[in-house]
Length: 312
Image 1 (cartoon, rainbow, N blue to C red):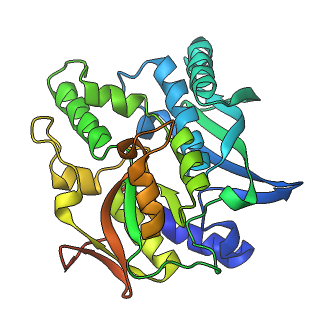
Image 2: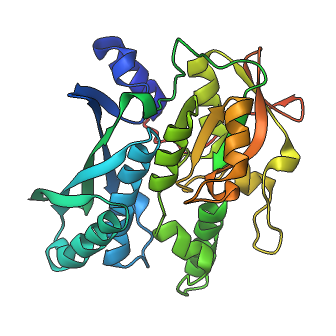
């Protein structure tokens, strides 16, 4: 059983509209409030040579990335920490890292909770706000569903975090400390908060965070919208010199970018850029929507694979 299976079980109780997106959404005055929460554990989420500041930064960034996927501006973040025996000595730097991340992306670290735990565990809850006309969810609006010919895009790099994880394991095997640029990117993800707001303003139709990997996210987005995607392999950026091949870019996780779909007309605006971002910063085309189902890469079915929590 994996986390998708568990979400389906929960959806049967509280409804899929409450579980199918990166954030919960609540009407509030003239805006929507968006809320999301994430849990990270030291053994599974924090490489051993991460600093405590980086642990705090990552804990905030994963939640801010979910808010970014809805076009929201982040308001507040709460951090709850389950501290092991050494956690009490580390909480100050963890808090500084989370606070620095919040400040960079326009949020306020507003408090939280502490408790004892067998291993360092951090839960972050983010609150954001967005006007209804700029709000974007995974599922396109009924008034404008995804159509064949719409453009599939990615905002952000692909495969860098996965490359950093490989660098970490290589260093660990050699009894060394990972110090590559890719490993730093893994430990200090940069959520696309301001880009998400701009994309919402420009009117993209469907959007989600791709921290679990591009391939699995494409399948998620296609399924919820009842459509298919045709991806052009040549449009997936790779970098042989940096050790990022197609496999790493397409299936690797940990890159806190955005996957979105827009109309051809909106894509022209994105290509033109904006006063704040050039076109490449806002995203690049990787394929198109089809009238079928599933995900194709150069005409061949691609497996639904990415980062999943699993239980026996």
